[in-house]
Amino acid sequence: MASKETVVVEQVAVTHQAQAVKQSAWSVWKARLVKLADAQPFTLLWVVVAGGSFLGLKYLAGPHMDLVVMVMGYIGLALAAVALLLVVPSALVLWRLFRKNDHLEHDVLEAQAPVRTGFSVPNFWWLPLLSVDWQWVEPDNVEVLPASRAFRRDEEVRFAERGRIHRIIRRFTVADVLGLCRIRWTHQVNETLTVLPATGELRRMPVIQSFQSGDDIPHPAGRPEGGRYELRRYQHGDSARHIVWKIYGKSRRLMVREPERAISRSSSTAAYLVAAPDDEAAAAAARVAVETGVLGTSWMFGADGTGIATTTRPAAMEAISVSSGYRSVCGAGMASFLDNATKAGFTRCIVFVPWTPGKWIDAVVAEAGRRPGHIEAVVGTDGLVVQKTRTWWQRLLSAGSGEAEDAARVRQLDEVVDALLRAGIRTIVVDRPSGKPIGEATRAALRGGAPTSQELRLSMRTTR
Image (cartoon, rainbow, N blue to C red; front, side, top):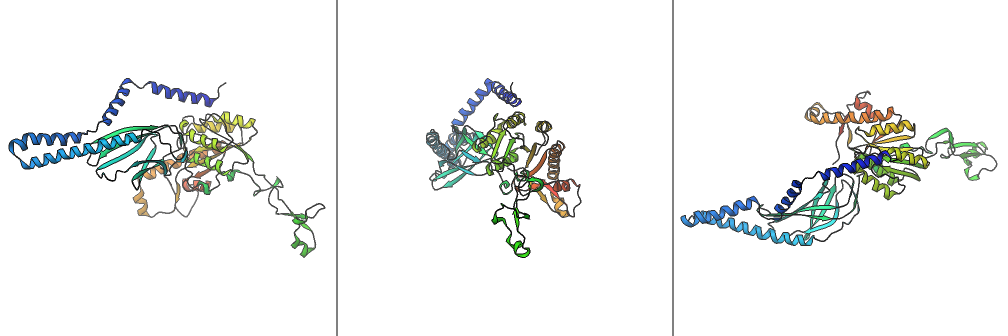
């Protein structure tokens, strides 16, 4: 019987196919017309300048011997000719250069960080009136930052979010600085890239460490696996290197150190990333958890849209990037993942979830009801900043829609955390830009439910 995630993924695929089929013949012809219009160099400004100059020379400068019109006409025709001679040959040269597929220098990139792809174009420094620009059409969430060096311009790009890319389509524009002539064309490169979410300052904070019970937490009923802080009398068979000789020198009693009883650190953890809107910070927390090894020596990772669980770091990174294309799944694959994890011997699971409410909450709460006490959640936020007391004039200047938007985002975060806590899910909130955990005390102060000597304000700014 097909799992729920498989059904949802198939529905998403069918929806995409239906949207592709609905593309009408007019859309195809429209794309062809746009391509034809981009290939010809003449702009409306060129037609106006060249046509006006020609008409002025023919009907004003010639019959009436108007020297002013004659000079302006010849200048206009000269500019139109120079622009045409600059743009057309340069565009042909670049088009010939870019016919081959240039592979990028890196196969794994990080979002929100400028990176050089290895692609470059001549800067045509000997043609100061020529302008060469390009941008990425697919994927469209990429900012191109050309960097000049010597005789070429290198390409730097910055991805807005994570993802899995299978092809790159660049759109080039060659024009003169006056805007008289312009030629555009697209260039496709079949390239597979893995774009990972930006971790921000999360690496400075042990994202999952607070979930990991360990020998630093004393427990009277636990096993003696903690640090050697307990003292007891020496017994036959104890190692002499554990004897506390200072105590023996003072009291003439042999005392040895033994491990205190503590909850042993979990060595196996299952983790799952819920794909939903505003899940970039949660994906970053999942990436840090996998890369830093805080999930334990034996772990299993899954994400929406992947369909299978993985136990290797490269496969987990790929699953994190691929999940960005399945945000409509909203945790539908978590049930089958947890069933497989339980069969493999994993009894606890950490779920990485976004800070905005959605359909994914129902899926997480339902699984928490099936497995009480075995599911814990990490809520990732973007731009959680607690500011101290502001003066009256600062409040006056900052009053407006910004504060209303911040308050709405605070309510969304509270709704998510409250829903998870009511379901019995242990929850922590981590902020990606600051790398700080957001505890209950801060949330209570922000809601006005805790007395404080200072005014606290929450300003949530989406990372771009």
